[in-house]
Image (tube, rainbow, N blue to C red; front, side):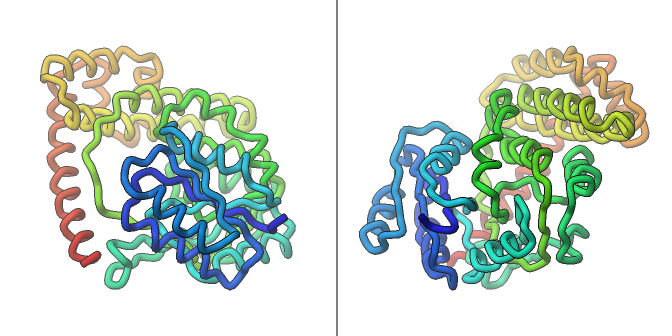
Length: 353
């Protein structure tokens, strides 16, 4: 049995996959297994996986029909034979010392989860590389259960920069196996956050280290309409309310303020997401009217935190179902985001070249 299982969920990763796999195989720590889970890719990803499997007996390849990222990770966890598990996305890569450092920190500090810092990179990372400057990575620190609750979990309520990603973390396998109940209510948006939310609630000790060991590739953006987005953000808000009601009675109003602001911020994402669809203006306005009738959205407009954070025009537009205002807001955000996507795609292609 290996000490660590590294799981890579793969869907049409293309040429980026080889760098990811090589970065894992070339680790200074050798006692690991690499589980490549192909989620019904239609490109050459499976061929790449099989080629590396034929070269290294630490590799397992699982080929399955397309089910999405969480189901793909879950298949990897089920196949893992190690007590510790980490995830690497197929278009990212890791430092050569990543597994060694994370495993040693987990054992020496006797923790359930070890979190390392990351770099955001464009293209191959040669020219554009940015370290996460979050205050959570100022020191190497072990968080006990009370500190996890009061410092780490609440970050997810307030949009603080503690990373919600499943990557750049080493987990005890039992935590991954015994968690995931919230994900039954999430189709895609926020899967990592709500999986981590449950695991951090259950964890007794967490180690956060300041070394940047994971390279997260940005760029290559696509404009894909997500028809399930609104339901996901509302369900996510409901999950967070339930967690607050169970674990944060002493600071309930403060945490409600945070999740209300987060919900209404993400509602703006829903508005511009409509412009990525093939829907007509009439159909989009009909959906916006439906959104503004949602109880959670209406409730959040009356929250103290939301009132202090957002303009009265925005809040009143939701309360009064001012569809034209919200439609124009979504369109303006979409145009701004679209321009940024185009520029990032150009920069990413140049950096890869």
